[in-house]
Length: 509
Image 1 (cartoon, one colour):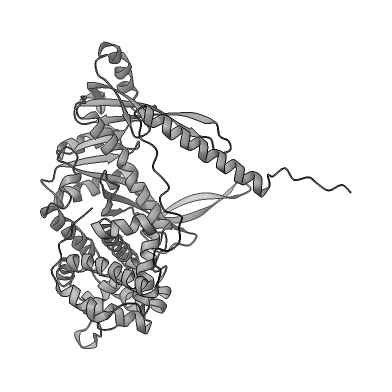
Image 2 (cartoon, helix red, strand yellow):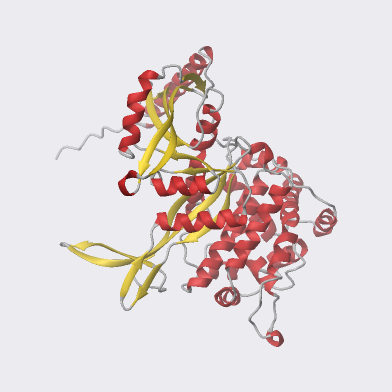
């Protein structure tokens, strides 16, 4: 029997191919610089050994990292604790062992340190060394509550008050103009999108949604799931902050299920945003689900600007007007380089879009299209491959050469920030898809605590000192370093207490 010959390249051949690809990529970057294009960014993390050469250096580095993280936490904590203290506590006063504020703070720390479940949080956060360090960092935590205590509390209190505390924290940062330099046309960019939280084969609460999925041989079986519409602040520097969550519900009356949908949830979420921020200038960033008359009318009624993805098959009458008017407006064109891409923008302003019964309603829209091209090295060879893409958006404001780059590249394209946040919360330590509780109120409460923990971590990672460590360790590496340090005997608690007494002003990078 003859031996089968492998066609896979050997180790030396793989190394030679990688060297050749690196040389080709280097040559391509040189060509791009000569053409006025910026080179593509280097890999996110350096591939080198630890910069600490001794245990003393490592201890000092860990101490500084925790100090910077906790400074941010302590600057935000008074607002949260003050708001938490206003939540009505349904527990009997004589049987209380832990204050409501301490239990909720413990829940936030569960997500700051990225615990995967209630069981894991009970096991790890209750370790003696972890507890001693946490008490030094947060004197409010006189003892470690069991997560069943938190679960029961969330099932009884008004969990929407947790999200109210979240919003008050954001409002305070806005009043202090912490985000002022990230605004687009003096507007706060808010990306709104929906995502599935988790699925189950058994119904956990009456509010869960239901659908039929294939079960084989042409049959179907019911599947139950939870879906959330999220609103996040999506800034052009890459900082994306959780803002509001709207849960879709499936109400069941007499055995009949009335399913919610994302467009209905958008109207509820938009009304909540308007109620909380009645005079805030907002630029709404939406995907291709939303270009329709009622949504456009709602944004205009709230005096919100918008940039909405316009797909090829959406709003045929608008596309017909665009194709008809484009040849008559050849001057509405901009050509530029952005990063390593060559971009060509063209737009058509003042398009009349009619909708509703007998087309009685109308909106004036502005459509912009971006066609771009770039080169990159093929994955399996040293050949330079040409790439191209096309994007189209509906704008609430007329386009011109002065605002098209800001509205498209710095605004509409950064809608990806909310999708990246979904990826981070689901797969990078926040366990978005974990239920944490089958009780509907408690599950929502854990969700709001997770959003608060994520918000605090993102703000800390964009401060001047920790932003440098993010470039060195990466986001997940930095969070792992923080958790290991607080869990271990690394910290000098006396020095830490002195540092925490000093005033701190949050400064974003």
